[in-house]
Length: 159
Image (cartoon, rainbow, N blue to C red):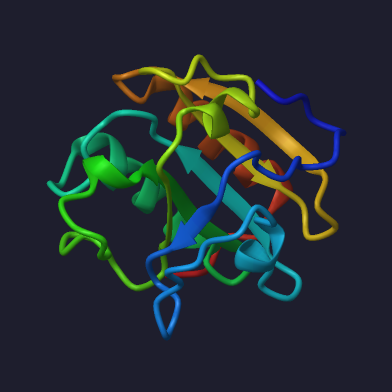
């Protein structure tokens, strides 16, 4: 995985934003304009070749971990276009999650994943540097470690 302390690299192939208004059908190899949201950190979950169109406990766990930090963290999922079930945002998601898609596995390899089934999570600082990176196992145990890391770094919303 891309190491913390390095600048977040731009992808070698276009990324498309499913939640842009109007929808971005041209794509861009400059990913930071999609991710920038003023002062927020970005939680980028790269899900590889896992289908996104149906709710999955792993994606729901990611959303649940990000929710208490929504004032300072922007959750983002990067998927492959042919695993989405249409060029649209999944029905199961809430409005806080930004959905990006690519049509090439080389994009995932540029972030240190195998471009097949490996998943990863990056926390990107507002200045574009990576603050945290971890591979994500199919059971989501590493997401729990990410939650503990977020508790140390960001402020949780009060219930």
